Image 1 (tube, rainbow, N blue to C red):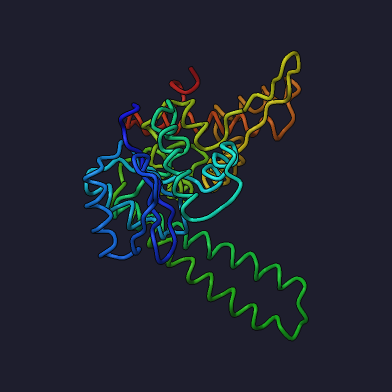
Image 2 (cartoon, helix red, strand yellow):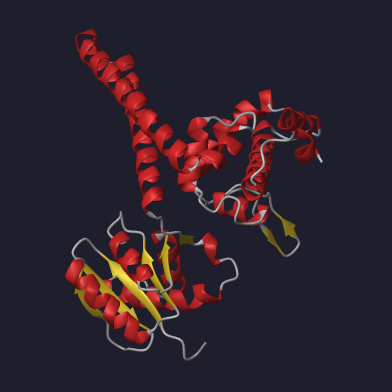
Length: 318
């Protein structure tokens, strides 16, 4: 491990600041085709065990894909996670060079972490990129419709016809967006989508979000996928103190979708309905019981994705 090379890349729209654990000084290339070619050539010479980049609004995507296509191990990490690591290492100042060096140091630590998939944003292939873009656009349209409806409530009567026209336009766009998502899912993920949709409480929109935002579904065990989404209770213990367990972190978009699906499932899914009522009878608060059902629902979906089978109440009840 001491002889391994680790690389950190600080990403901006115009440049890539690169730090290697084998070199004292950082170096810079342009964030364009020519710069990426130079970056790949130099890193192939270094042969890093892992290269880490921050997720930077999509500016990191071309670089990460180019390195991965060259056969290099690449991790795209959450900026908050990288910054927390830098603070823990005492690096309070912030420059491109310092950030790149901290990412190289983080790469060394991450390479040894047994559950590094929790910290790494997976790179998507062309099909998954398209699905993610379609799902994101649908979410944006839903948010815009919600915003316009809220404006309708507080606006003067003179402004309401305009708001109504905008809402109707957005509804049309939302319908087209949902059709695009459904067509893509049917074309590329029909079998898995049908298996997931067979679970009572899971609709087409939920399936699309799971496929787009949680590609690890069915590839990890139930504990790891729960931690990845952020529905696994985290301990808060110290000495003799035993704090209240709570969920935190994870993939917020997946968790929101899972929450809405669970609200339906505890009414119409016989397994989750029984589980929810049993928790309430045991004195659990409704929100706590819902979170427990979210985790149980995710476990069911993970098992279905792993086995490729459809919903079978007898198996999940066991």
